[in-house]
Image 1: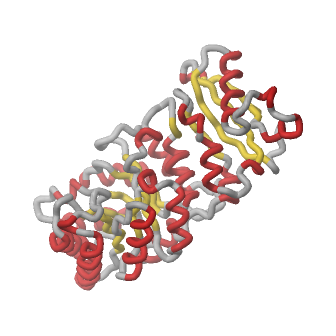
Image 2: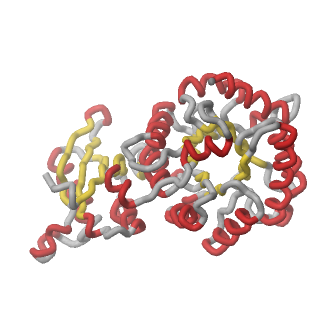
Image 3: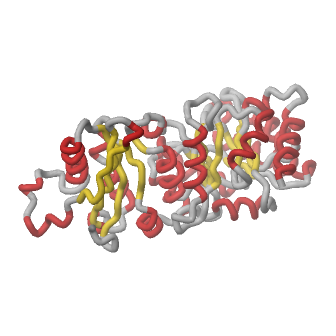
Length: 374
């Protein structure tokens, strides 16, 4: 067994029709993600830097699927978090049928800082120590800043915990980023006086690197409470950069553009690894993922695994709030609270907008159901 003190492991699953084919594929992954040369051409004194297959098991329930635990020397990463991502799934991401199903939690915990606030920090800001939390989104696209501020007022007046921008709100002329923040922040602050409780606002700062940092700075200076970002659009490491640059601002990560990495059963990443481990390690305080039973195709077991990894003590860092979303009906909330538990941030959009008595009543009923969980 490779000495784990100077190495870290990645678990991969892939298809193979026989033991010998599986051995060849596992060795191919190990080499591809390290030396990227035929092993016989690697100088003897550098062979230690070639990945090594330490475990290989057939996944009988999956049919011709095999799991390999491959160890890599920490020196080939040397503390470089972007290089770590490259080693985990660089060239091998181009190969069909290969999926990352596990990452070394000990190494992740030393390489990444994780969330600045996490579950406990966000609970503290909201004075909500035990119950599940609520979240909704400002939409639809095409609304003016004034219209979005009115919607924010109604939601905050009903006591919603977190209002985020819809991920489709960028810098459109009808509601450009700056005017949206300048309209929504005071609207929410005024509505807090009616609700008697805090509501956090997370504008969407997703953009190019220059736009991302400029929007983050503007939002922080103009009273926003956190950021919404789509890491797959901005680059994964932008989450860590933002967390370091703006430590007082919690980050909510949105899964837009991540589908090719997470929805296929035999390629990309296992959703729990991608959302629950990697995004948490990068610094996402809140991790949005597509909930089961909504508009997307995740199974409840996958969702529970994401939740577990967001909260797991295997990673020595603050826990992230899992944020199931994507078509949760307000009338099914009790079911999902029973399934996922108190350390969950429920994101409901369309179902609140459809409430016959309006957004404030919808938000108030949402909060009442969450409070009853305590």
